Every structure is written in C-alpha cells, then in structure tokens.
Length: 174
Image (tube, rainbow, N blue to C red; front, top):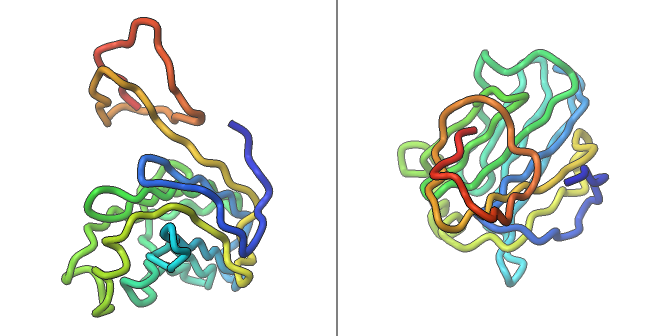
C-alpha cells in the first residue's frame, strides 16, 4: 500500500472495515487544519475528524462535538501519521502510534443534538475539505482475514491490506 497525495473535495471510497492514515507536517502554532469528512452513498455528510494546529492543538469530531484540546500525550514531532478508525460505537484516532482519541459517541461525549442522525449512517467515502491545509498524503488500510479472530494487543503496525492466507494462524496481534 502506498501513500497517495491528498486531493481536496473529492470523495474517496471508504468503509468502516478500513482505517484511514493521514500524514501531516504542520507544527503546533502553524494554524493549519486537517479536515477529513465522511459521507454516505448519497454524498450526505455523516461525520469526520478535524485537527487545528494551534499553540495548543485541538480537535473536533464533526457533527458531534465542539472543539476540544488534544491530550498532552500528543507526539511533539512535526511530521505526524494519524490513523482514524470508525469503530462500532465511536471513533479511535492515533498519532504516531499514540492513542489521542478513543471515543464512544454518545450523549455524554457529543455536544451537538443531531449527532446520532449523522453518525448512525453508513460511511461510503471520505474526503479532505478545501480548507484542509495540513494533510499531505493518505492511505487506506484494511484487514480481511476470514476464518479466525483478530486479537488487538501487542506492538507493531499493519501497513497494508492482508487478504489471503493458505493456512491462517489462530490469531494475529498488532
């Protein structure tokens, strides 16, 4: 899987079994934005994730929350690889391997009253908005491993699609 250059305002096929990786090269205080949106089959907006590179970097979950500060464990390197994953109950985001958001989308987390009507719809594509000044490349990773359970735990990173094993293992740890 190779990284692709970011093209803005163009829908790119995507679904909830996939993880979006986005590379940025914006430092704290640069005032750059990473703006990733999700759409359904009708190209209706159903959510997204955005980062604002202020002196204290902040994020917001589109159609769910207002702007919130990113946690103190955000890696300090300027070159960042963000992994954005829509989970069954929410959204998980890592930056350079550090979890910066693992949110269950709920009344307790979301500030917006219409969050459920947007986030309950199926995602069929993502896009980078024209206001995105931070994202420079992306790739989509997917795990397709029929016949066994995938266990989350250990260390390392999956960087490409895995789709066939002649004799699959009982589990994979990543």
